[in-house]
Length: 174
Image 1 (cartoon, rainbow, N blue to C red):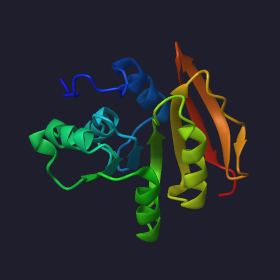
Image 2: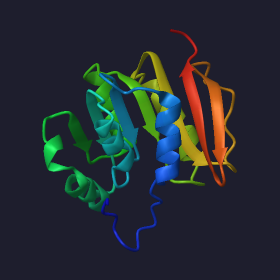
Image 3: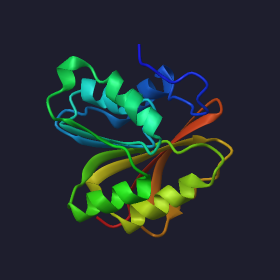
Image 4: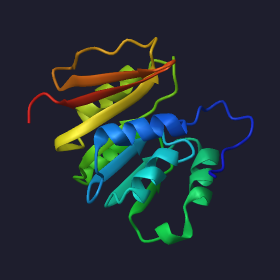
């Protein structure tokens, strides 16, 4: 059972959505995984349990970043997991400068704040998605997602689950 701060306005990714996500992305064995807007860390920790080689979780809310640290199982203190307690723009710029790349990027920005478009723009500006990688955005079904973003990403799939959607992108030019 993962900890989550009571009274938080954040919305944790449900077990059902996590299961759907990982069923659709396939095996994570030896893959690198970036979790943007990580919240309680449930998605990134699930990636670790599914044998992702390296996991980076980005969460700007310091209280939630502390919760992620508390949620890390003792057996996962092996250096595969990094928590960046900073905003997504700074984290992406830093990861890009360090020449990091990720096989799977999962982003779950807060709903209805215009952050889906902002996040996609940042990922275009700081291209940390590996060649052949998958970008997955979790968002409200009420938030429109274009087929192509900045001529960089093209939508390959979208699955709707009640009020939530998972939209999958690949790089336009690889």
